[in-house]
Amino acid sequence: MPRVSDIPSRLCLGPGPSPVPPRVLAALAHPTVGHLDPAFLALMDEIRDGLRRVFATTNPMTLAMSGTGSAGMETVIVNLVEPGDRVLVGVNGVFGGRLAEVARRAGAAVTTVDAPWGRALDRDQLADAIARHAPHVVAVVHAETSTGVGNPVDGLAELIHAHDGLFILDCVTSLAGMAVEIDAWGVDAAYSGTQKCLSCPPGLSPVTLSPRAVARLDRRRLKVPSWYLDLTLLRSYWGQERAYHHTAPINMLYALHEALAIVLEEGLAARFARHRAAHERLAAAVADLGLPFVSQDGHRLPMLNAIAAPAGADEAALRRRLLDEHGIEIGGGLGDFKGKAWRIGLMGHGATSAAVDAVTGALRVLLC
Ligand SMILES: *Cc1c(COP(=O)(O)O)cnc(C)c1O
Image (cartoon, rainbow, N blue to C red; front, top):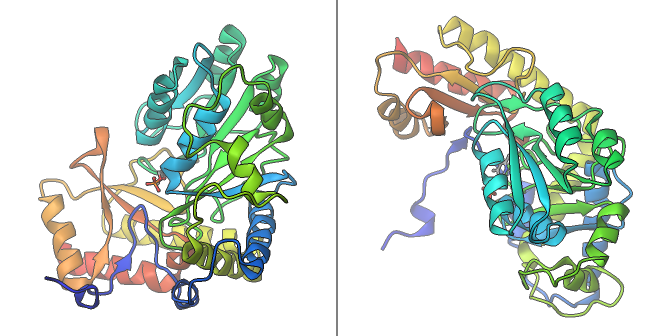
């Protein structure tokens, strides 16, 4: 039987999880209390406040779902979509595709606006599709982790709201690594994950709903089909009633509280600048190694760098050597990029010059 203590430490520079700072690991190891303990409930209030600050929102309905980013995705879809609803999804990678699939399973009539892998969604195409279909819901992935591309979000809310639609934004990879402005952008529902730029282990999914989205939830004809993800039940636990729904993952919430404290101590603007600087340092180094980006210039994400894998090499074997000989994890390509691209994540605690130098130095050794 392997033991946990036998697992080597790694520098996690893939598409998530990101490196977790010692303060967060220490919080995780704090003794467990009851999920209705007054001290713990006070901590939940602070988590909610912290999440509002990182989402840049005043939304009363802001909480952390038990589950990873995909649980957040499923939460916003099953709560805000009813069978037969028209849902428009932007698809230019794995996560846009997953959103479309989750919406179809919720019984929606799904239309997609597509862009090739490595390119951003086209704002005009989204605008045309919104005008043509008057969707009940429009869902876009802010930072498409599978391709390293950021999608346009500015100005979409006005078009969506003109038809009384709701705007859903996947902020799993963008939150706490680049600007996310839920209120200013008119986003009605957003979700994230803890293991990307928040630098917390995977296990929780921050979610926020605008008052307009809550009104849609309150007007549903049918009950939310998932009991576990039903926000009409969960709001009684996160709200003043503190009604038992399911046992909150106490220690994960300790960790999220500490991760949010670290984010807010650094300050969002400084944190975004740090991600940007790490990206620029990496971009210069990979250009030097002759590995071009496969993501569109002008739309590249700071925290997820998708570059071409070395031509003619066994890229999976090289990534394995990077892990075994240098203790560094990077991601391979997915979908159209499978076997062709590498994804270097510079997320949260991993967005540093030291991390960039470690991975590019190791790649230089392996490639030269
Ligand atoms: C990672 C990710 C998800 C899914 O999150 P999990 O924590 O793996 O469930 C969804 N959307 C995007 C953009 C992601 O990067």
